[in-house]
Length: 215
Image (tube, rainbow, N blue to C red; front, side, top):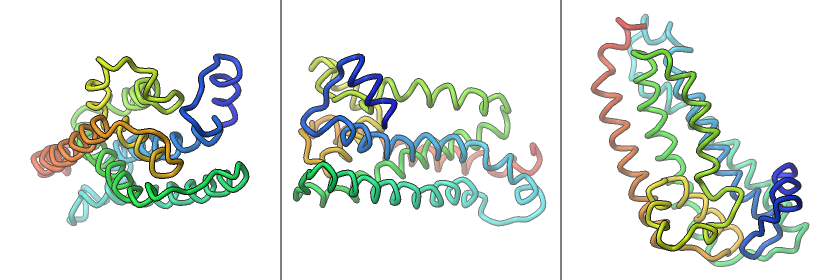
């Protein structure tokens, strides 16, 4: 948060859409950090726990999902830190906070869908673990984490919605800080997150029977 505030707000002149930039940045970083860490760790979870996969039979889907579930606690702790920052800046809570569970569910489904797909692919194609960190690093620039969504021209807003984390980040800011939000972008993103989660389950189940032999 401090680095982004200095580089993008102080030096580059990026403005928030209402709240102080540190609050704006932290509210975007909380869900993005959860997503990026979840995808990075869950995508390598089957390989990291290959003894369980190859020697013990149990629902292997619990391995990547368990990794994501553990990181959900980190997200909750991050929200606690954000609450302290809101008290420091005297930023009020709005009724939009009631939407927070919806966008938290969107973040979990997006992370789970990507994590399940990549963890299954990583068993067959071991180079996946090298590509994931690069994709995650690039993802932060196509997601409105360090800049408000209105920086994107209106004609490209639909494409922004195809990024499931875009709607989640916008939704987190709307719920926590009461910032303006595009319900079109958030609705499309939440729909994409559901599709990503369902497709992740399907791919994982289709490839699960080969895990023990390939590992």
